[in-house]
Amino acid sequence: MARYATLLLGLIWVGCASAAPVEINGVRLSAAPDKTRVVLDLSGPVSHKIFSLSGPDRVVIDVEAARIDRDKVAIPAVKGSVSRIRTGTKNNGDLRVVLDLTAAVRAKSFVARPGASAGHRLVIDLIHSDSGSAGSPAAPVKQVRTLQQTGRDLVIAVDAGHGGKDPGASGRHGTREKNVTLAIARKLKQQIDAQPGMRAVLVRDGDYFVNLYDRMERARQMQADLFVSIHADAAENRRVRGSSVYVLSKSGASSEAAKRLAQRENAADLVGGVSLSDKDDVLASVLLDLSQNAAISASTSVGEKVLAELGKVGRVHQSKLQSANFVVLRSPDIPSILVETAFISNSQEEKRLRDKNEQTRLASSILLGIKAYFNDNAPPGTLLAQSSGAPGADSVKHVISRGDTLSGIADRYNVSMRQLRQTNGLRNDRIRVGQVLTIPAS
Ligand SMILES: [Zn+2]
Image (cartoon, rainbow, N blue to C red):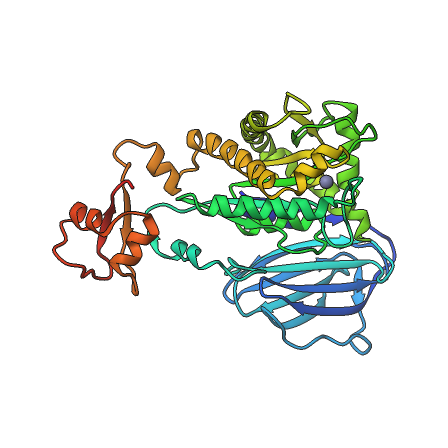
């Protein structure tokens, strides 16, 4: 679905039209492990089209009524996945920019409005297809994924709200939302990773700023099955407390308080100094309706389960699932929920949010809710779908890859060597590449 959405983005004209030709004043190129970014500095706003071609791989950007003075503007040298940048003017006066690539990428683009440090820009991100462990080194246990199991892991994107220059809400005793959300997110990741067939990816794993759009994009890059954003609430009235769970609403907020909360959480991007409204408009008009209804209905089910679990360990602020227009929940293709774990503005809850055991308990509740949902709704192709549902598919198979050992496999699936040998009629510990082992239920 993400691919489809990207394709659609490429087929429409993005941005607003302008009369006089726009000058490309600069071309910048930067590379990160997970993506290569091309920035075109512009003299004004532009409309553009972007599409990908293969054989050889390249990305083409047509910028409406624009031109570049090649005598003045230097084209940067090769970097990341870009092997060459070419430009040319089409008959209709549009500027065509061709990015020759070293490998296939997923391209996305957006127009950035002038900010403090830069003017109008057209930004093209080339997402590397093998960026599975982008950002942080993969935990060793997750090499499970590269082995040929018969089902894939369920991937949960865990998003610690705020971070860096955006501290979020603060408690009376100086607790900052950005720190407790990260602590809870890390605990949730640990717990998820300990579940067979489940894997978590932290959207943010440190005290740094990530804008709301990039949070969603990271989840999409990881092909997440669910996006969970962790927050802590705040209210003027210091007695207010309890957990709430939110899902996206396209039409309106479920209450005035929900609306205000969404405004506050969405303001995170203003802290970053870049308005994302251009992209958001595109998202709103083109992408949302495609598949978001399905995503919202899935989000609603997960949200209700998580809220029910939170209610078992603590007080619930709103007993019903809440909805509002949170930017971070706008992925059209990934069910997304936002958990306001507790009120940081309430002294007791502030204390609770700082307490490691309470953080663990909150994470466990969220996990239980997630599991309750996916037990009934395991995506096809996941290990969970095979072990929980389909008749005749209740045993897990493991195809031996190079480097596998029987004891390693036993460890990985948490079964004994004896069970493994017995189930598969092995007389010794010798295994060969390509051999299929049935993993007994542990
Ligand atoms: Zn927040």
